[in-house]
Image (cartoon, rainbow, N blue to C red; front, side, top):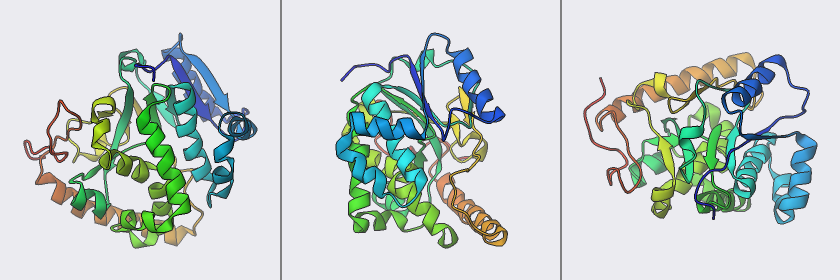
Length: 280
């Protein structure tokens, strides 16, 4: 495995004919990182990638219930094969990526988690995101993530513990999150403490402050367009949002008792809850 993240940016979308906002996001990445190689994969190129690089996973790719699962799976495989940074098309940076190139892998703190499995078994009340991340090619953490995506698809019972705590009105969306998205990503990290030295998590100063959620450290922000979310009628969507917000307010109160800081890795606290000064 290469020791560092290469100067490469990977993105994907339905077509290279992007809407204006997405064009702006792509231009933002390129302008701030002018010496980085840039690769874009449309839907046809994603399928060609599987045929060329991972034919053994093509059947799994085709079998996912939801389209977003296919492209979650793709992003892990693409970064695993080529190395570099992956970004969703609704991520905007405020600074370049040069300072992260010495890392073996880097993932953003996404927010606090609903998962009872993570909170109770692994003492992790937080999760990492997959809307933006970087890794050296062949990184073993991504290999484990890929393996777990396959496992989740083939063994539904393995997914069930992660569904405990998921808001009832959003269970299908949390199924996606826990089979190919941030839930699966974070579970893989929790269950493999040996990766701690090679996985950098970009924690905010205060994990209990929602203003620090969905940020790529202090380098960028995820606009959370949510284009992947499953179609629902207006009233169901609004009710589900209110229920999630109410549930999360309760969990934030619990998390405040563990302090505002969290850590991961050999240089940090052995307790992922990171008991420090309480959140204000």
